[in-house]
Structures are given as structure tokens and as C-alpha cells.
Image (cartoon, rainbow, N blue to C red; front, side, top):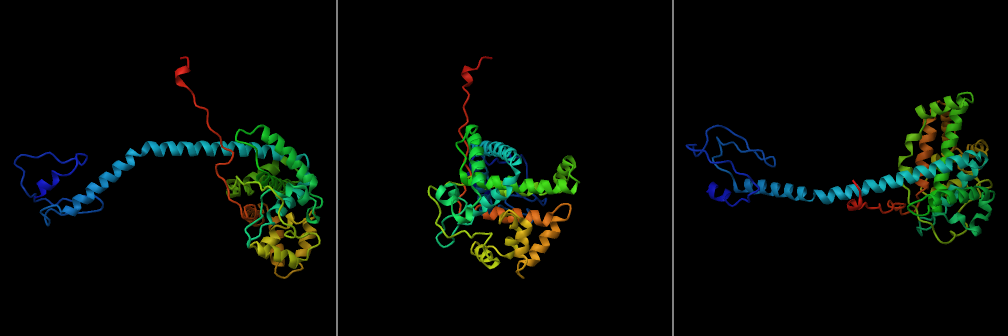
Length: 344
């Protein structure tokens, strides 16, 4: 019975060649490993039909995966190309922003608030607003809560012209650029703190930041790259005037976005031009005070780990509120080479 059943198995399941004078049922104990099935020939003198079927099924599965290898390889290659394109574009953006902000360091506080105010227009109930570039519209940048941010927006506009002129995958969105500018500004404040800890020595400060800083914590932030610009301003009344708002009003706004006193404290640099003055105000609240104290102490350490990591984590969440990220944004078709036209 076993021989007649095996004869029906497709040819891709090789059968051992017949051996002359071999006993019908071997006496030695052997194990057949197929889909974790074991059969002891001393106890079982025949294969079960279900065992053979499982072996055949496993073999067919392997053949199907192997035959689809070309498709998988092509898909993986295309994905790698797109990742490389986005990575190269992001690197060029970061270079442009770093240079522009380094030459205009006085705009760092405004760039941080610009990114925050563009993001906190998000409304959970209507799922509208968020970091969508709406703050670029004159009717929104001129609102009281955005007073003093026009110069930061002008820097964004100038950087965008340079970035777009070199882009192969289309113009960068304001939504992306505003958040990336705030990232660059934040990193420069971290670097400046490291240089101060080294007595103003830039070379030593750079080494300190490279060795102990948080530069490697930005991975998720940079992956969320592909926001879409809105085509109209966000509704009024969603952003507090941070310099006039009470601590409770600021807490309420952060709470509406899904954040608490901890996140409010760590984002103090985004709430106005004078971080120390902002923290002094926040520290008057008993819920916020412990976090203000924690981050002030962290900034006194060599690495500033608690402060920098928590800030990056909170900023990353804020920078994607309500956004559908297009992970294929800024990619472009690769020019094909006609090998027949190559002269060898």
C-alpha cells in the first residue's frame, strides 16, 4: 500500500532508489523529520498517509516561495531605492536648515514656537488641524498667538526655495519643513549646551555631543517625513497665547492633545523666547513643578539624557498629530539604462 501511494506523489518529492535484497521492513530505528513529524520504524512499519500529505504540502509551499523570489527581490530593491532617495533628500534639507539657522541663531525660539503653534491646532473631536503647514497663510501667521513669528516663517520660505531647486522628487511641504526646522533648531540648542559645558570650545563641545548627546534618538521623528500641506488656514481659537496664558490654560491645552504636566514642562523652550522665565511660571503649579525641577537638573548633567530624550519623544508625537504620513513622498522614478546603446 505504501509503494502504490508514494507512486502518486509529484516528481518534485524525490524518492530513494530501490535497493536490491533490502528487507521490506527495516529493523533499525530511524526517524523521518518532515514538518516536525517523527516515525520510529521499529514501532511503525509503515508511513501514515497524513504524514506523506504533510511532507508534500511543505514541499509545495517551499516551491511556491522559491518561485516568487523574483517578485520579492524586485519589491525589496524598489523599497531600498525609495529609502535611499528619501534619506538623501532629508540629508540635503538638514544641511540647508543647519546653515540657515546657524546664521540666524536669534530665530531659534521663534522656530520652535512656529512648529508648536502649527501642530497644536489639532482638534481630536473633528480630527482636523495639526502640523499641516497652515501657519504659512497670512491670515493665520498674523493672529495674536503668532506674534513675532513672521521672521521665522521668512527663514522657512528662503530655505524652501533652495531645497525645492535641488529636489528631484518635488517640492517639500511646508508641513514637513516647519517641523524639520524646529528639529534643527532643537539640535543646535543641545549642541550649544555641550559647547558651554566645555568652556566654549567648539571642537570639544562637538565631541561631547557626539559621544553623549541624543543625536541617535531622532529616528522615529525623521521617519515621519511626508506630511501634506493643507490648502486653508486652521480655525481660530485653538492656540493659546503662551506668554499670556495661565499655567492651567496651558495644561488644559496639552491635556486636550493627550499630554500631561510632564510633556508641558519638557516643551518649555517652545512656549516663548525665555525658557527660564517660562519654567519659573510653570513651576508655580504643583503638578508641573516636579518635572520642571527634573529637567533643570538633567540639563546640568553632561549628557542631559532625561531632558533631551523626553523632549524628542514629546516633540515627535506633537509633530504628527492627525497627519497621514506618505512614506513614498519625495521619491522619483529611476532612469533606466539601455544596455544596447552602451559602447563597450
